[in-house]
Length: 479
Image (cartoon, rainbow, N blue to C red; front, side):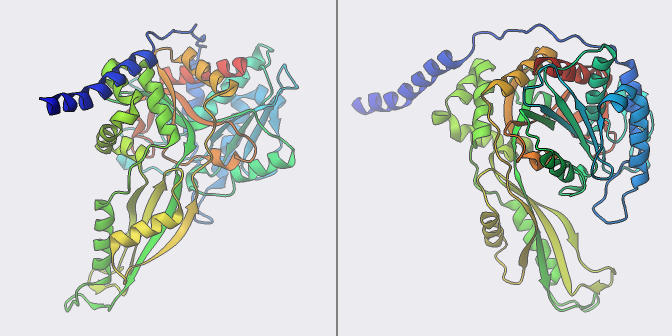
């Protein structure tokens, strides 16, 4: 009997502590702030439609980018936003990058910086419901490549500037806007890299930098009915690793097994089947705490008592590709190459493994993991590209508080939280100029809409065009 009481105590005492902690930490209600006014945006929607027609597709291969499309796009922006062109446009010291400066009322305050990118990824007409580079407005959506990523952000920023200029109003502080030309190149050095260098030569530092990033996500976590606005405060690192194997080549009619391609295929399969150790980084812990404070009680208990529930959270998150990427470094094969003829056994075969690193993980750890998983001395590994995880921006202080407040004005039902960005943005290229770097796209959508980014049928709802302009107007007035 005594043993039963001991076992019950072991189970019930931590449970009771967790319930009490949840009741103490969980907010009893959330206040809906005064909403930000939504401006008339029919003209903005038309401008976004027109912006999509410019095929500003960037390419890593020299000579493959049609820079004339960027020149035409810049010419169009000058026509669409004449006051910005006349009063705010600064000379860019690098080709095809656009910079604006809007002087604020408080000239002593450290300026802010809004960023977006002009370039988009490629698109094939035959894969789309509507042409990817047309002015399509159907079913309440603007369709086309760049409608979400990220000409929405660019057009909304300039529209907010233009509307204030039309009313002869100034923002609270001075704001800069910077639109690079090569974000989609993934590591390019002609866009934000050169803009950041120009700002550094100008002696500028910024109080807050806002780039594209997380959205106001619907059904982000099962069991929470409210949308969740996720603001990226850090980015995972990036590694491209080349796997290579050389073996005897020859005619496919007399194969010698295993082939180089077979060895690479086996290595790729082993990597897909493996997982690195899961852990909760500071941005993810903060995200769980923020969501837990406003979640229904069962999830609040789960998220606010990590000392007790961490194993269960790890298990749940591991079941979802998106949530799994928040808790572990991930590696995935993205490219593979063998022979260029169907009847020839390749002498050398290769594959590229793309790894996204959690903050705190290193290149050395990744290579050690991949080698152990592959377990084949004939498969060599070499790093083609490496970028360490970004610095983490603070989630306390006036800058972040004002950003959260502005999001709540435009998306009053949303839970606002910091989180870890899974992808890479231009924001990391400005790290030497700002300590408060955040990544957020003012649009509300479900996961199926987010997944259209870089995929066929990318689109953005017209309601989100309205909200994006309202958001940037509110931010200019609030900060």
